[in-house]
Image (cartoon, rainbow, N blue to C red; front, top):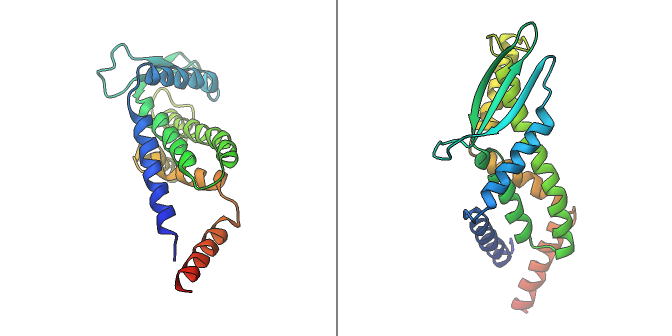
Length: 206
């Protein structure tokens, strides 16, 4: 039997931590937006052969998005385009969900701190990968900005990957959950949890 009390305690702690982190505290979202754009400009300043991307703030946060990606191509002639995204959904939500999971995990605090460190590294790598997929998709559309020429099959696969990993809200939570399990738990953790529950049940029936 699964340890129900431990599971319910974990669930309640996770909800509490996530609720605290999702509150728009003064300066927190602005700080993350700045971090997101700085990271994007560092990683994608040069893109492919003759392409570059700059992450710029939108003048008004009344938009559904808060960051404008300006795509440029210099070969064989100069052309540019743009797309708008919301860093809160692309990066912030997966990050705070990972943090909430790690802080609520039923493992010693020393393990949680290491899990938090590696989890943040991996979840930010996932965020960068999501943005990269969207950029590759944009740069492979059949227009003047195209850097890549993909056949119908590979273009369809790329669009499906963008739909699942970039646009689908479930990816905000499913991928961080896998990262959390990877960095937090060891092979024997579940066996020890079940063994502890079994000993408790035996003690009650004795």
